[in-house]
Image (tube, rainbow, N blue to C red; front, side, top):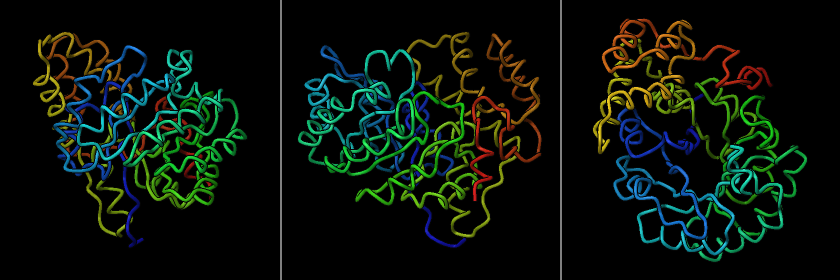
Length: 340
């Protein structure tokens, strides 16, 4: 392809993209831009010290944006101003989280049911943030037809970047993305647009970019499963040979992540740590023998966890490029590939 790649962003993922994960991911090439886990904002909230460490101790050498989630305007403004005292590249507003507990509080994706409130929040934060003010959004709550009204709000308030997870809140993660809505934003907004959703390898990245012409691509769950995805995408755009990790490379990644997360634990609990790592490994096991996930779910001790990973990953075969088409974690990527 031999052209400059779009800016590659790591998507914010709660309880995953913390300081430890950033530290590990940067060893494998890493993203160009990072966004923190979201700071929960309400009347009595204060900035989460653990998430702040991702900013103050940013190990990547790349820009990091602080993401806010909430609907209390004075609290959002206060939190944004507090964050400006830290080395952030910008402030990002979450308008996309589809978690029911978040939406019930009219936060995240739940705010998309109340566009007048979104209008007020955007105006207040735009006035309060003298540096980059960015937004991560879904294309609507119930229907993609809601997106035009959202785009009008983003234009009105002069945001500096829009990242679009191209599904509605109602669709969560279970449908194909809608690249035509991202293309609409690219063609109608003066700010850079970043495409997010179902980017799991170089082919889906190239296809999504071709269909949208977005200035950036944002990868989330695919980066947990494959930490080489960012240098692989860069190589594909530049016409170079991408890294081709083998099973033992993935085993080394799992062990590195395990050790780094353990080292950051103030009170290390072996059983609790195994439980935490099992949640992460559910992304990694996609595309492998289903027995891999089954056995991991039964692991109770660090020794059992490592032995199971070794049994399935200690080999020289290539890491599967894509998860299976029926994967609950990457539903719809086949449709992205099949679009012209």
